[in-house]
Every structure is written in structure tokens, then in C-alpha cells.
Amino acid sequence: MRFPVFIDLQNRKIIVIGGGNIALRRIQTLLPFGGEIMVIAPHLHEELLELFHNHQIGWLHKEYETGDCEQGYMVLACTNDRRVNYSVYLETKGLDCYRNICDCKEECNFYFPGIAVKGEVVVGITASGTNHHLAKNVTRKIQQELETL
Image 1 (spheres, rainbow, N blue to C red):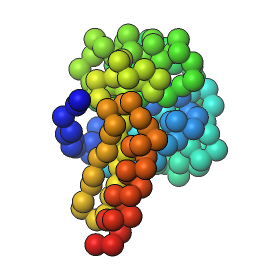
Image 2: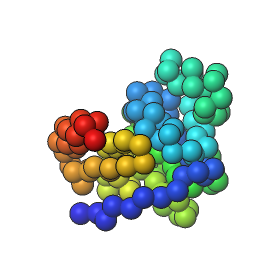
Image 3: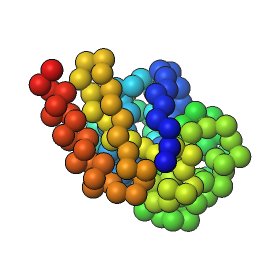
Image 4: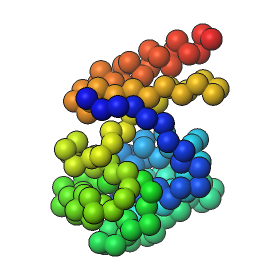
């Protein structure tokens, strides 16, 4: 079990490796918290491309290379390629950064939580990386409850 913590992402560099559905979901969750999001991917999901054109995220139009994570305060490996995700893990385990590897909870030093928000109230939900369906359901129920306040 992990201890929940809330961190200030304002003006912090967040590096996201991958430009597909997982990256989209994580970026949509992160956007309200003020981080400087840079996506490294050869292609972007249509909605991420729109965020890029609206200057909400940055984009390096290329494949991931070792060294790309060096400036990241938080690094998210969000590809469907185990080799790439593992390479991000190897690079970031020697860096002083928060790291989340989407396909291997053992390689993460934090879990990406479900988030429920209402005004200044922010609730983070996790099932310790074991049951995403349960965490999603609990997040939805808490969000519904917050909406009644």
C-alpha cells in the first residue's frame, strides 16, 4: 500500500512518452494542475494533436531516445511497446523524478490515481495498482457525491 501525497505541478516539466489513448487520459487528468507537458511520440491521438495546436501541450515529433527524460520532474511511459516502456524505466530509475510506467506497476515509483475534483477539493483514488476497474468505479461515485455539495 502507498501513502497518498499531493504535489505542486505548477510550472514543472512533465514528460509523456507515447501519444495514444493512455497518454490522452493521463494528460487530460494532468492539464488542470498546471504542469508543462511535453509529449514525445512519432504520432499523436487526434485530441492530443488539438491540445498541441491550442498550445496546451508541447510535442517532440519523434521516437523516444535515452536522454529524453533527463529534465522531467514527472515522467509517464504510456506506450503499448514493452521495450520502450522498460527503456524509460531504466533511464528514470537513476533520475530524481516521479515515474509511472503504464504497463508495469513494479517499475513505478508512484501510481497514477483516479481524480475527482469539485472546486478546490481534489480526491485521489487508487486500488494500489491492482484493480483499475474498482478505482474507476470509486472515482466515479466520489465525483458524483462531490457534485451534490
